[in-house]
Image (tube, rainbow, N blue to C red):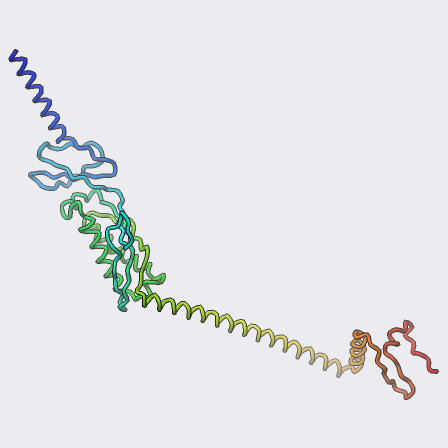
Length: 289
């Protein structure tokens, strides 16, 4: 009976040890995560625990799990659950203050996760991403004048900031995926100055339009005047060549008016009515009585 009890106790101890050891021997890494092993005798191991089942040395190795998916870090004064800090306050090289809303999207380089764990730790967002982003943006903006920051030239500013962040992140085992400048705020005095400048620009454009319209009208009148002058010149030359053209033109005008005008012909006793001339189908002169 005692022998049976000893066997049962031994089996129970063996089962318990198996459960304990299996729990410390096997570690399952979820999808999208990466594990870093720490060895009591050797420190942080350079091997990476990928997704799925991984085997460890019981009581010697322990694992820290990192999220290796893309994570957004937002800098804005507006409340949001993903906000890591307020807008980045910067100053341009001509002394203007601006605030920039930025979104940084980054993920852990799995192959360098051990380096990140060894040099920074799991709070790499607060210790690396936030201060590096603020510092780099302030240094980059300080190189540009305010006119560049609030116009399309800020694409160059964003490109410079992105290149600097990539280099900074790579050293620690992070990969920058995207850098977004979502909004830029200016001081009230500068915003007022920009508004005045925009109004002046619109007024200038309106004056240019009026000027161009006046110039086109002037050109039209000049062309019309030149046409009239040419017509008069041609008509004068025609009159010089044949004076009868004036008589025909005079008769055409009288016919268009539909009026009767007495015209004195070459003889003293002959008075001809133009209306009668046109109304007489035989084109014969009226007889004298």
